[in-house]
Image (cartoon, rainbow, N blue to C red; front, top):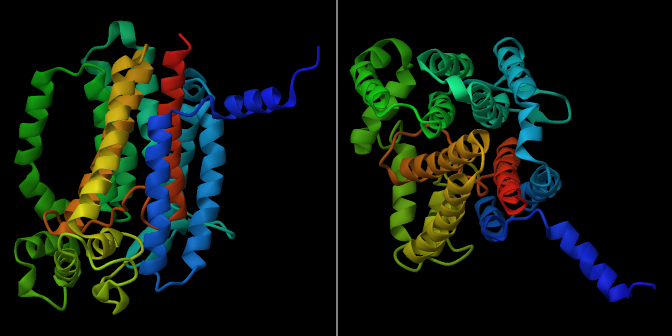
Length: 370
């Protein structure tokens, strides 16, 4: 008996949407649509970056659909390969990378510029989770030390670029995996104390002059309003001038008079705060909260150590990027050049965040099929 065409279309449509976790998908879609309006305004009502972001997002949705349909364990089989590839790319940056704004972070591949640290954002938690899963029945300090070695290798290379902000966040992504794997609270406490004790050494021997200047500027940006403090003062002015309801889309004076630096990338949240105000900020935070809450729920329900540690680490990494970007734009954290997930312009960054969401969807699908 021939199946009714409408029923066939409905079944085909359901098959397409089957791998999508609706909480994550609609949260991501809402942020993406908002980012298009915001990018159009921040880029002086030009459609150049808008077209590029749309192209990146379409490619991202294709990757998202394919990855979301793939079991986490299958992806885990490629973790070491992806990690090795990303590590080689980071080494390549050191020798062949192009320099932009004083930092050597990109590889020019002809048709596209690749930022390998964005790939490592995905590869590192996958590899650490795979490593700990492999030794699940015998986990001890030696395995955690091995995992730490996997974490520190790319962190060292990223620090050399220099990119302290990304290095710290990528290190956090690996440490989150170890935390969700059951790392002893005693070890965590000792590590925290050791970190704070090492701050003077980091200040004197690890941080560059411009990084120390950023920290000092954070304490009092008005000391150098036209130099080191310019970014923070202008972004804080833009956010404050937005008030409760904002000035309205395309009406941001700080934005359109070009007072906000990097208005389409690192400081796009200042544009958003000026045009949509406190209410808009709260709505964006609520959407992010839904996304992060769903990610932690998926981690809590994950059936395997690999899935649990990976989902938890990816979610907390996403949280860190959101917190650091909003914090630096608002003047409560130093400027470290971290994009706002799904909002800031940047092809590699957009794709990496969509892959993170796709992997969370894949873990969610694993739960529903068990």
